Image 1 (cartoon, rainbow, N blue to C red):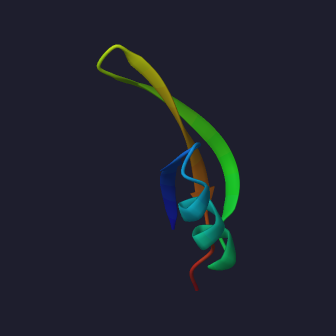
Image 2: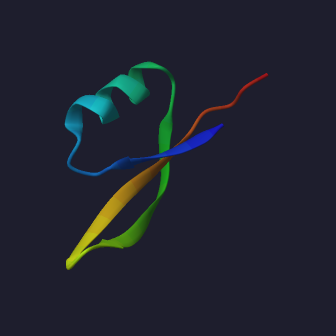
Length: 46
């Protein structure tokens, strides 16, 4: 399972890490005039 979380959302990043997700990459996207970056996080689901 994977997800994207905004790099400045420290609370969400901590929550997902606690749930077993690890950072596997980044993705940059445009939001209006502002460039944003998400951390891509993944967790194995059996």
